[in-house]
Structures are given as structure tokens and as C-alpha cells.
View: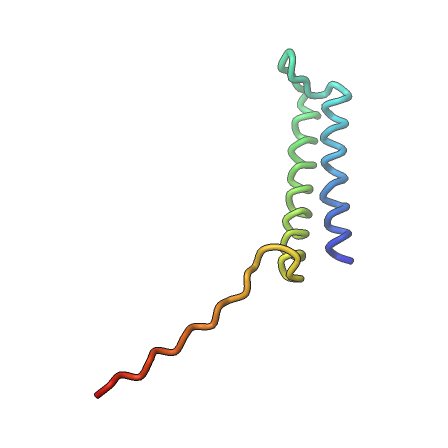
Length: 81
């Protein structure tokens, strides 16, 4: 449940960033931005990064991605005297 919630809360701010670009608060051609658009974009990207990082850690802990199993160390063969 936390994984799903983190994914949703990580994607919603990205939609907000897209809206900021579509509404013209930040333009790429010609380059320009309002202070409100810049700060809101930074805030939304930070929120999104935090939730998506949490989702990554949750997925890794559940074994869905990454985190390979540790290989047990082999015992050294006994030395001949």
C-alpha cells in the first residue's frame, strides 16, 4: 500500500510541473520564467523526488527491483601440515 501511495504522490507533482510549463509560467522559447513558476517547479520536483525515492526503497525491500541476494562466502580449504 505504501508503495502504491508513494508512486501516486511522486507522479502528481510531475503533472503540476507540466501544468506550469503549459500555462506559460516557464517558457523555453523565448527563455523566460516567473519567480512563482521557478519556485513552484523546484518545490514540486523536490516533493516528487522524495516520494519516488521512497517508492524505490520500498520496491527494493520487497524484492521487486535491484538488491541482489548476498552470496555466502566459501570456507577456505583446510591447510595441509
